[in-house]
Length: 118
Image 1 (cartoon, one colour):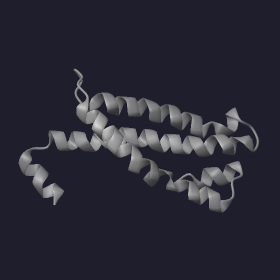
Image 2 (tube, helix red, strand yellow; image 1 turned 180 degrees about the vertical axis):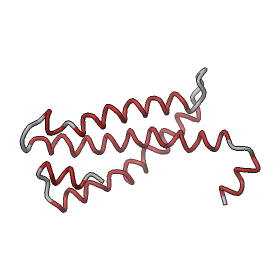
Image 3 (cartoon, rainbow, N blue to C red; image 1 turned 90 degrees about the vertical axis):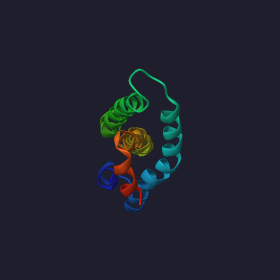
Image 4 (cartoon, rainbow, N blue to C red; image 1 turned 30 degrees about the vertical axis):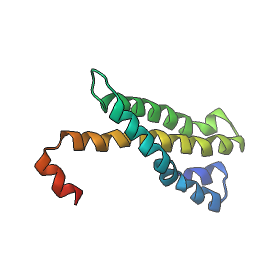
């Protein structure tokens, strides 16, 4: 929830709360794209692990930029940087989470998969 930080930066309460729709919207588009990409990936580290690592690094970078918005852009300009960075951070979190779910399914035995899918 970014509302408290956005309020701290000077964003209005309605827009600060509205910014939280980033997660569902970005997940709707990012999840299938990342899932298809990790399904077709061939790497010596596996199909999922390179995407997980990439998502981890990108999430760290986006989180650092988001949290440092006030230091990078002093004054009211920080809002115009932090709001889009929150959306970028949500995309990178989806890049990190999508292959995690698929990796769990890949590693589960067949008798474990069926009860969890129902």
